[in-house]
Length: 139
Image 1: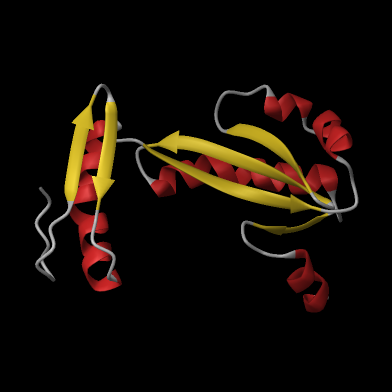
Image 2 (image 1 turned 90 degrees about the vertical axis):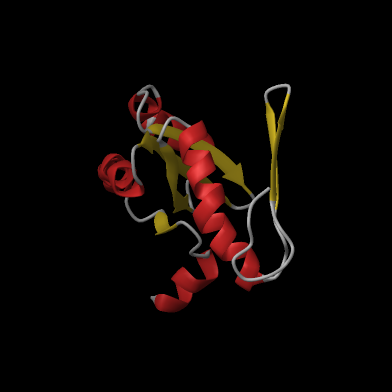
């Protein structure tokens, strides 16, 4: 059971056959403190104290095969990993690192994102949740 500091509904962490299930109450005022407290602590200890962080490079105007070719050497490295994904009308490249903290992961991720932007140039229109429409309107 996970105690709920802001309500009466407790949370639950259950483990069986190598699988984990986490259940938390829905109201944000109850969910967030439990997720940021007990659940975060559990996940950090279960993951050996490491976290996984990612950044998405968003690309339009060049196809996935061309992106693959231009970034082949980056995709061969183990950390951070670089993985292109074809989307409708664009390509996303996810750069992912595992580290002791989000800051340490970003220290690995950001230089690779900069290198991707340098190699691909103008077709890189944004990062993470930025949309093509918002990038066009910003110009």
